[in-house]
Image 1: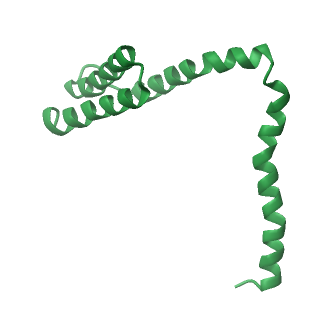
Image 2: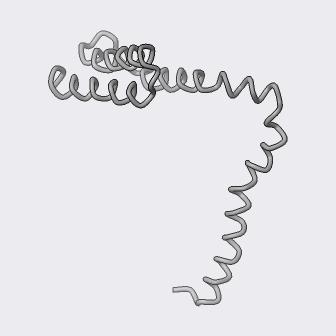
Image 3: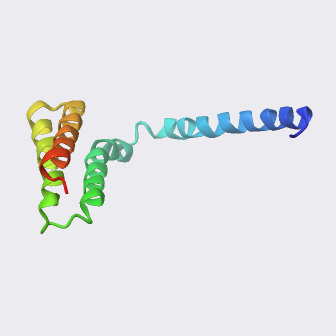
Length: 109
């Protein structure tokens, strides 16, 4: 085990570095808050990120198998709940519940 002075020195060096690395993004983004480009990206990025995640998650889904109906139904329920209620937690929980129920009961092997 390392000596106590070594451990103290390691903490004294790593603590300010960690703090600075965590504070740096906030300090760098402060001047950009009024930028029209950043405001545009702030409104458009959430939908783009969600679309990328959906494509990534469903990219290997074989559409010819009946087991692929569970994720497709869960996705449809998630989209439907979100369009209907505009409540992200409800949409996520509803889609997850539908997927778990379908995989656990209807589409068992």
